[in-house]
Image (cartoon, rainbow, N blue to C red; front, side):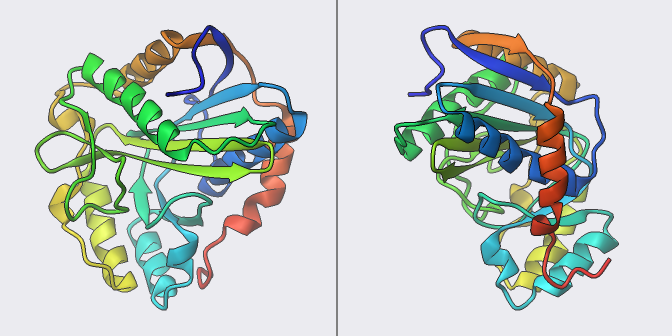
Length: 261
C-alpha cells in the first residue's frame, strides 16, 4: 500500500515553473527529507519539478573506472552530470520530463520498501493511463537503470524510473517520468553506458508521448496531482528558504568524480 490514504495531508510543492541548476535540483530531495525527518510527526511533502538536461549517476556508477569519461560524454551532449542518492545506474532526463520527490516523516522507521514501490507504481500507472498512455508496472529487458518496478508501455519501452532513500526518521521516493522527446536521452545514454562498460538496449528508451500523442508535461503533472488527490488531501505550499539554503550547501556532495567542468 501507499501510506497516503485516509485523507492524509500532503504539502504540494509545485516547482515546475522554476528552472534550477541540476546540482541544486538533485540536492533538494535530500534536503527536504532531512527537514521532514528531523521534524518527526507524520508530515509528507510532494515536490514536482521539470529538470534541466541532467545525467544522474549512482554511487555505484561513481565508483566505476569509466566515470570521468562518462561524465565528459554527458557534458558533450549538453547534460550536466550529477551524483544522486537513491538509484542503481545512470539515468538521463531533461525539460520534457517530470520529476517527483515525495518525502515523509516516519518516526517508527518502518521499511515497507517493496510496498512503497508497488503502491507508488500503481499510482503512477493510473496517472499515465488517465492521459492515454498504455502504462504498466514492471521491468523491460535490457532497460537503462534496470529496476523491478519500472513503468513501461507494454511495447518494450521504459517510461518511468523510481528509487527510494531511507534515513533515520523518514523516507524519500523519487520518480522520473520521460514525457516527450526521448531521442536526446537515448543518444546520451549510448555514450555514457559505453564509457561505464554497461550492456543495455538503447531501443528501450521511451516516452509517455509514444502511446499518448500530444501529451505535455503539464498534462502529466495535472494527472499525477489528481491521482494523489484521490488518496489524500493536497495542500499547496512553498519551498522553505531554509531547505533551499540547505540544498545549496549540499550541492558539492552531488558532484561526479572526475567531472572538472
